[in-house]
Image 1 (cartoon, rainbow, N blue to C red):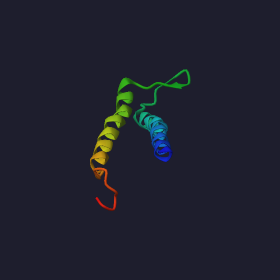
Image 2: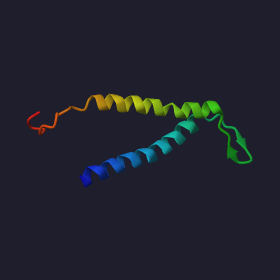
Image 3: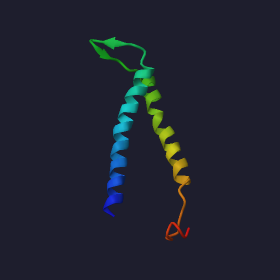
Image 4: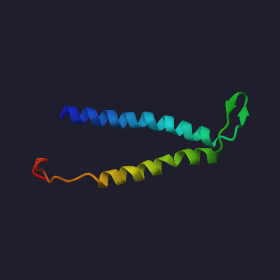
Length: 79
């Protein structure tokens, strides 16, 4: 239905918006303070540290997906 599609869309796009901010927070936490011509310089290890949120989020999503109860096309009150 339209409601479920809109909810899925909001969650998917909202997740991308949240992940960008989290990536920046993790990147800033790993930053060693290097500045060149007024711009922060991040090393490869800083990006690897920040990117580690992706496998962690994947593991959390798999764990949550395994907790979803299958109704086998029955009404919830019958399952």
